[in-house]
Image (cartoon, rainbow, N blue to C red; front, side, top):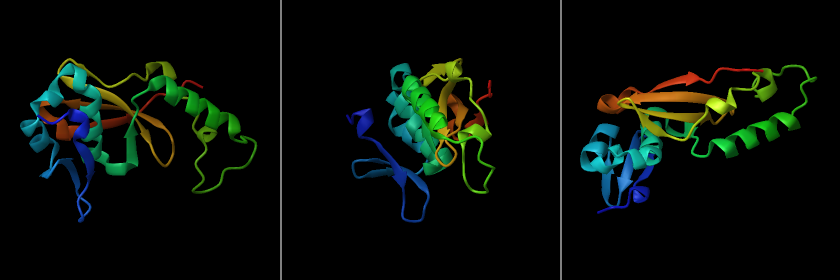
Length: 149
């Protein structure tokens, strides 16, 4: 049996998302879960989040596995910014958006028949809450985490 961590999310040459299990290529989250049902176990929520995110968003988002580390990095980046500088197009500053409810961000988990995890949008650094029903993992929804400051 393959260790779950050995299943690698990635992309095929045509840009489509894939998961690689040794020589086997899974072309959808449904195919991956059918082949590796252990991904649906509660202890595998982090690995499942990596793959759901890859099939839904590719490299545009990264699952947040360590909420405390994310909060530290967010605060550090915010502290380095100069909020008095005027807005510039295509320059992403966290201070232009605010501070999300960092306490709401949790590690990936299975809750009421859904995978729930948080992801960081790579370009902006903003946090999103992601939900995907276990019976339809290809229907993940991404919603920005509410700003509290």
